[in-house]
Image (cartoon, rainbow, N blue to C red; front, side, top):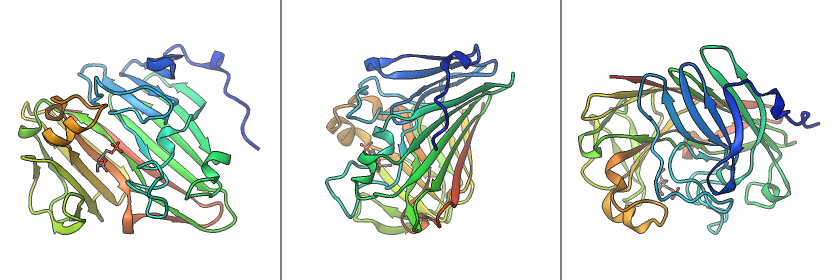
Length: 297
Ligand code: TA6
């Protein structure tokens, strides 16, 4: 039985449910240690700013805010498949979760952090896709001096299921050409630009061209360091894959919801479970993917 709808009147003072871009419902958080913006459309976090800092997430000025399209930037949730669906090439890339309307089910302010929870369950629309299983997803966003994202998926089906998932985080950087990603040294990767050919990371990831790699069996911690010296650390639990992406000039220009020159100011470092790291659940089993973002410098 689905829980009673959340009463927006019960929101703490630091949390407001409002109408955002494109008329889409948005949860705005103004906590003592950080602020954020979370759309119910796709449970899409579009902004997080620590109280004494500058915005950490990147959002395209050209992003669309419509029900038919994923928001470009912030943290899209890829679920229950990543990229194209091999069983249904016509299905939306990265699954249906980032296009679905999630339900606000809880909000709490404990003084230091503000926690907001959104829920998505199977529906006739999801059961009509190439992934027709019964499930429940709970997404908890904790906003403060650090940001914690936790995606818990429960198998509500009578058979075992498997799925892919990614917190497809877009981080703002001052210049991608002076940015490096550490923590993936020695990890095997699939190059999405070279027919999924296999490579092994030999050092910090640096950027001189379009980059689109799926790292497998990755450790729990990566860090993104900009030229200015600011470092965003990402510490995960329940995540065994990491995707690193920058579209560079030509791909950026080819995307209608991405500004032609915006490629210099972002990098995606995504906490995920894809391909052989996909998650398998027996009936009533749950899995949680957690990513904690810390900023230094
Ligand atoms: O995560 C990297 C990636 O899979 C790239 O291949 C690129 O397509 C990016 O995601 C964005 O995908 P989207 O469907 O949001 O345009």
